[in-house]
Length: 221
Image 1 (spheres, rainbow, N blue to C red):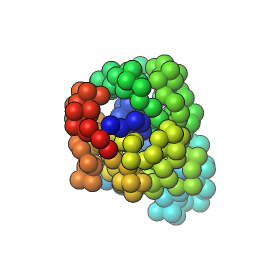
Image 2: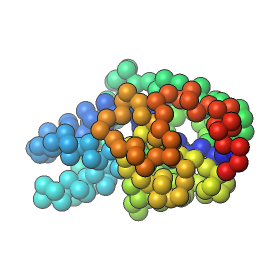
Image 3: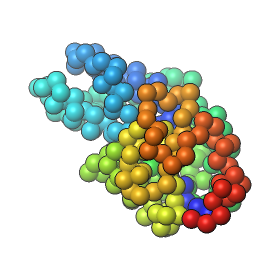
């Protein structure tokens, strides 16, 4: 049976994508670039800095990636404070409590900045359930690079073959599989235009992967 769960955050724990979408497009407008939705969707799961670097290169912008990152984070911070619609995804708190009550180790592995991770965890009182949190923004490469999940597994204190990842994005699933970790693709109503073909298991509701259901499915790992 698995001993550790490595959670993505955006699109798995909380649906911050609408806020990120607004913040990014406010940033695009501020620096006067036209970003097609198809290009924006391809960035899913990557850090703000890496996205900013790609924008600078793609549009040959006369400014550095840090400037774009700062502008985007400024808009997101404002939206986070003012938007009251932000909430945990249906069933995720129950599955977090379920895993925690059965002694599983929970680690948060997100491409979001640690400031944003901490904002979410404080708002929804999640620190009590998680052993560790890691931000891809603090690493050399973000998803689809596997580094974040390799390090998250190390933080869990469990071997990678006793961990599994819950991810909702193509880039995140690729990162998990390249880290040689079992990956559950969470295909929710909030997930759009993502490829789940590399996931070991795809679910639409968290109740499908309760501790007892996983136990019955995986007697040994």
